[in-house]
Structures are given as structure tokens and as C-alpha cells.
Length: 327
Image 1 (cartoon, helix red, strand yellow):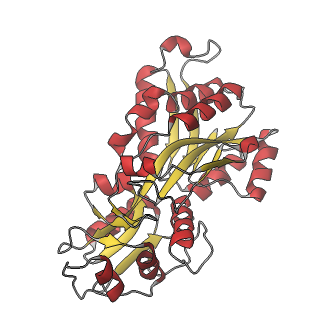
Image 2 (image 1 turned 180 degrees about the vertical axis):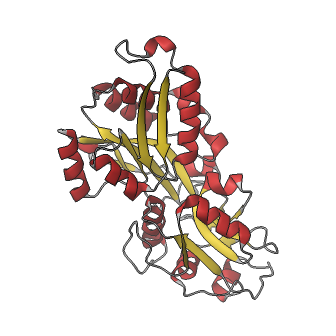
């Protein structure tokens, strides 16, 4: 936890900053903001969870001090952000967000899904819960002859990008990964919208960050990883999936390139890493103070209580070094 003496002396009383973007990051951001305000009651951080794409647009336009995003910026966005900053923009990994395949099927408490089956469901090829592909993943479990009600994000979403990138690598997804949904199903805005839609619709399935599914007490599918094991979603199994990940784009990073085919024992393979995007030459002491808190031992220590997994120590070291150089 940061002591009050760590606040820069130049910081004015009742200072505030705002950020926007990733809804996947919202639970962690809400917890960070609340705790940060407890430590520094004269400081305020606002955050609007309007989706990664919108958050990047807000940041480029100069409307916010930082953006939350579940995916690195495209080259064109990066050029615009660099121009806004007058320097290179920095992607700072902040938290690991497991992506849950949340479903509402009361008669099937322990659903198992392989990557190709998930692709079949979300592409619209598999339309019934007792389809032979789902039955093969759930041998011995009775499945209802119920139509699958599929929900996806209607807004541009980093969670969508990460799910489709996983399916492209592991499940023969027929489209290019992207923030805009290209499969089947009914579109719903935001993570909260997906959560409520699945919660209210028997026979449904959707993708949403684990914290949302956990808070709503939704059932989540076990997913088969590259080692052939069906793994339940948890913060621990999500952290295991970071084994084999590479760091790229050091000038604008560190950006994490996930290995969706990791065979690490107990790895749940569908995860995302959320970033705080800000200027590498950021001179605002409140931005630096807040982001240093999120990357501190204290800031990372309680993330699992909110459905997230903390960053591994080696990645945290790089993030802290980048923050120390951001001034």
C-alpha cells in the first residue's frame, strides 16, 4: 500500500483524472479506485466502462488521462495516440481477465466444451444443446434437445477480440479475430448486458469476464486446453495460461502475446490481459501515482476476490520499470 507521503508535493488538493474503456477491467478498476481514495481522500479517479474501442477513441481525442483496453492499439490508432501525446504511447499490463463461457442450462451443472465445439456454437453451426459435438464432450451427461440461445457483444469489444483470437488459434474459427463480432447470435451491449441476458434466458450461452459471471452466480463451462484436459475457470487456472506468453513491442509495451495453445498444467486457455494506455512522457503526478498503486503489491493482492488474476512477478517488474520511466 502506498503511504500518503508518496503523493508528489506538487499534487493539488482535490485533484482528479478520468479514464474510460474496457468493461472487462471495470471490476478491478472499481476496486482500485475505492481503495486508492481511502488512501488518498483528496484524490479522485473516475472511470467509464464504455468498451475498449471507445476508450481508445476518448484517449486519442484528449478527453481522458488514460484508456483501459483488452487489446493493444492498431497501428493507425497508435500513430494518432503518439501524436496526441507528443511521444510514444505506453501500454501498461494491469490485470489478467479470464473470459467465461457463461451458460444457463439448469439440467447440466458441469458443461464441458472443446475449442472446436465452442467455435461451432458461436459460429451458429451447432444450434441444439444435444448436438453430437456437445454430447462427445460430455459423455454420460444427459443433454436437453433445447435450442441454443447465443449472446455476443454488440459493441466493439476487446473481450470479443480475445475470444475470437483464441478460437482462431485453437478452434478453427472461420473469421479473422476482431473487436466487432462476426459470428451468429443476438448482440447485447457491454459485459453487464451479456451477464443479464444469460441470467434471464434458459438455454443460453455467452462470453463475459469471470468477475461478472461469478458475481451473478452463473455457471461457466470447463474448456479443454491444448493438453487435452477440461479445466474449470478460476484466477489460478487463468494465471497458469500466461506460461509461454511472450512480450512484444517494448517501445510501446510491454504488450503480452498470449500462447492460446499452451500445455501448461491446469491452464484455462481463454484469457485476456487488460492494459492502461497512457502517454510515456506523462507529467501528471496523479496519473503516475494511481497507476503505480494499481501495479503495486497492494493493488494486485486482492484482484482474485473480484474475479481477476494478478500479473506474474516478472511482468510486474517490467510494468513498474516503465512507470518509473514515465515522467
